[in-house]
Picture 1 (tube, rainbow, N blue to C red):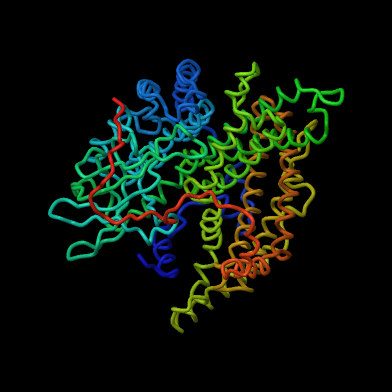
Picture 2: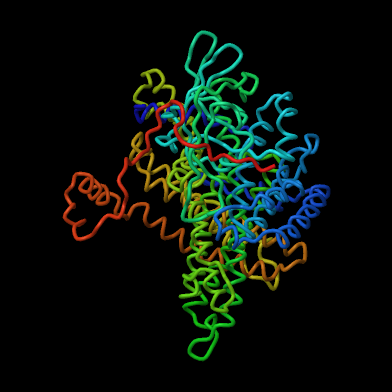
Length: 638
């Protein structure tokens, strides 16, 4: 399918939520306003939610400790059926499903803590449960399903049936406008044809959420639409169980649909609403990845602490050497911040008072990048042992620490559920939404002269009120945020004042970019990426400070929390300042020249002198609709 850049953008724009009906801390931050009142005092879960959540976490911990062998899953590349059955038995499939449908009805906060726990036992198990509940059948039905659909499918998802989400195709990634799988209306059914790639849980799923394109016809507006599909329907073939550098136990495959009949009653929402349903689902579903990343950070810290105290070089433990100590400090401070970002975003989702689409996206982006850096630093701290597999370490009599496995397993999180590059663009689009709402027609080549005139009037009023507020603020007053500098504790108020000043600075830089490039700003992806990364650092700093103050007020590890928050904020400020500098002093122009040269074959001489070990074949597999010629590798777990 050939789709222009403009058509792709139109599809993506139509799928996003168009309005801001509730406040958003992160959106305000990008607009230069530190709305600390939206997150401080830190929101807290209700007593009932805590009781249910902690009771289940205790059961899950016992199960993981007694029934899950993570190294076996890594070794065999498969989650044993008995482990999946055990998870079903303790209710793990229904953590996020409402109790009236047979689920546990856990809060987002405790669901994320459960994912962190189970992923520490086996990241493949975390992926299985997350794909089932965060983006699989339960979440879209909870938000958009009819009562009949909920009663039909949610009890199954809570107890026995595993679900999967099928959007990606061999030639379709983050550009859904190219979606080729079709769902053709036929009486009271739809007939599905197409191929789906990287179907996490697809190899063992009982129920599928499938995104397919309905052609427009009389009585059918058409468009990308979501369906619940029984995985054992005639015409469905799982043609391959994919293997990866990490998450070796993940049940991920290629699924072909050939004349698969799906009842119209199984359509989720109206025709054409599929992408909107997917994006809305991901607003909270994306929090599952930062949950597992925060858990990974906790494990990195534990291993770094124990190993660097036991290992001696040059007459003292390696932790006492500054070169190693700075890495440990980074791991400890960043783990504290990731948990702060995760818990704050989760509690905001539970309260359902704020729009968290930017917060969840920032959490996913930031956690996936920082967790991978922490795992890389752990491998470096472990030295040669960090590169050695856990089985090899154990075979020669040492503790089997799977540091290299963690590095491989975490790598996918920078790609899963929106790559870092796509997340930059998604967040940037939301961050500049206020500007596009008032001035978008000024840079839209298709806007009429009248539309441009009205936009100019709106923009004039908006910027006359907004720009002067970016010149000065509370961050310039030494006494502000004094709640965050209690006696005997590090000063976190100074960091919040920095966040306030930097937020206004960030908003000014965003406006300068819009004024400079206007409609061309959307193609300045490196610039937009830095804008978003600065915002992520400021959001993480805010979350760390708020969490530290909450812990201090509770009397639990308050002084230590303040110390970690202080260390993190100092590290984050250095990263933010570097990003601010690179907004205008960078290599973006020469990089584009080099890319043109690479694509034009100017540097092919640089590739000489090596062999390419790749096997022959097309870059993208053929995905023409039709009957399958491959054996079906789908399996049921009873």
